[in-house]
Length: 502
Image (cartoon, rainbow, N blue to C red; front, side, top):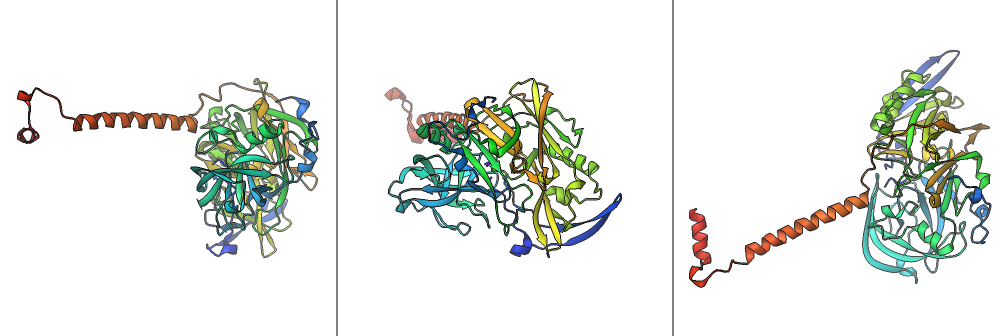
């Protein structure tokens, strides 16, 4: 999550917690006309919250993995997050767990909450062991606190067997569980450096690889593109393939980009295009702070300067010229009469990533069907959409908005992330994503790596220790009187008087 986790857009006409106004506008567009309606909302909640062919197997030769059994083991969509069923404890307790490549803790609700239907009852599991350590995680949206422990887990549609993993039992939370979700925990799939309270807490996937012997790679297909993210619609599906790649889930070639640092899945973005127009920004702007691939972040999040340039380019290219800024800011929905698709009014958006051959790049292209996202309908006559891109203060995040168009391979063994067009990214026979390459790549988009959070902790603790040492020395000097010859002794009282006179 960029420490998200799963955006839920609760429409006001479902919850009754906000007031909306509707303004109808007609746009004359050449030989045809379209009506666009803008629905005023309160600010919606959003989560801020390798080339080797040996991995392309339908099953693992050891017999511990059958990738076909894992196909369609996810449910959800970009608005509510993608989750899978897991069984925890002895006897087993079944929970739905959000899949998040932007965090590293495995955490489950361990107390009742208004927005979760069930929770993990530690007292009922004979194999649960507490570590006695407190843990807290803050995401871009929401946070939780709890205690660390260990227990057994199994995955009905995952690798065979039962493994022992670290579990964070969530006891209190704020803004983490949201109305309408159908998951009760989070599965952090990033590297140990992001684990809380410190990197010694082994993440789930590290434990899975170590205890089962599966290859250190997983791949992700999310099939919610073009599906309404309304809380009333049936969730879409997807697949989390643990241990390799399932060839039936993608089409065409796989392109890989190096993982720059093993904390988040940090990659290098070289440039962005809107339509065929290069934004012509310094490529370091795209990598300000960091650029990561994060399934737990709903939208494509861009640094402020990049976001403004993208919105300006879309506004100039879109067939709809007089469009409210509230739509791009995420505070308004745009609605069209049913049967009148909005996607033809918007351009493609392309992201260029550095290839494993660092002198080359490849291009991910998201068609408007990915970033102009259906949310709900009004009176069964209007379809309403949101803008699937937002501004970010903590780096560029390739979230579910883009990932839904691609089969994404997290090849940790070779420090790379792969992309291929997803087999389910199709609407009415038209692909919603494209991938192409190679293209020549410039150098110098990463000036210097940002200080990682664990390193900042070390620096902070070192400074605190230094301050404590200095204070201790001063305290000793104040409390312990100087030893003098008896005939030169100055009493506390006379010393006090002298200091006052001075």
